[in-house]
Length: 389
Image 1: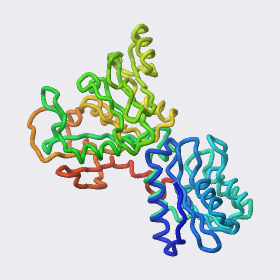
Image 2: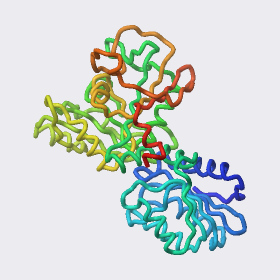
Image 3: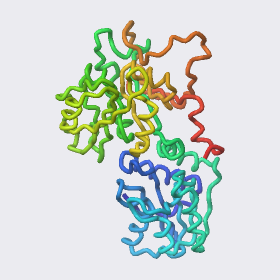
Image 4: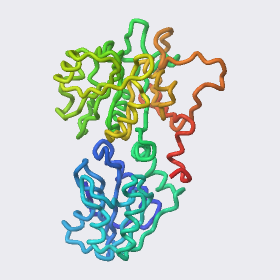
């Protein structure tokens, strides 16, 4: 949670280490942003901290407590923080007030907080208290890294909706399931473990009723080090979720999670039965007696979902892509050919090549025998550009 280390003299190395520490908040701090703080005393000793679970201490408080435990004097210290210190009372007290009380001399911030309740107010309060404040250039590596690490938080604060990442596992010829529905397992163990790591960083996992009926999954995170489970979202227009579905079973680690079912039809008896199983139901009808997916994403934003991890079948995948609701694709390609079957998504047919969804490949990596491809929908990278923040 915190450490005492020699001060880093290289600016690039210092910010690189800070961002690595901020990444330790992945799967822990949600829905709060992933933030790291380093306090360097006048004697040159550094104390690090990263944001803990929601309701727990933020990065600045963790670093201050580490210094206090070591008996260090932080008066006149220099503070580096990857995101602007908060200035409002939320689950915790304002971090900028704690820094003022500690009488630090200088605070260097990688990027301002997009939260309208903060958005420069934290920096202003520090300056008003006589603390020197430095904001890194918005096109600096550290600023970009902080925005990228918190892409879901930035999306929710700016757009009011989560960052939607669609995960798909397919054969090299694009088949995600055989004609008889069999899909376990197309990819290998390494790819599946990596997929759980991406689940873990999300606030919620989204699936459709087709996947629930076909595979009866739990869609939890089965990694030993996780301290929280993402909520589960089910798009079930006609309320066909079985009362005995495994998604209602206790999840790995016995950690709590909520099951949110969005539906279009009304069936009072079934609604009561699902609620008794612990589901939280939201009636959100759209066109053709289907769930209004746009409204659902806005509602998930209000529920503080930063990153939404989609693991669904080709029909719901196709609907999300057709409606322009997907920001990023996480694709695992297995080195095998499976021929005809279900594809990764179903939308179209298109009449012109230029009507396709254009993507930008951002990373291609080996996962055992498989390939992992990360690709963002063109235009979504605006959240990572300095001129858009």
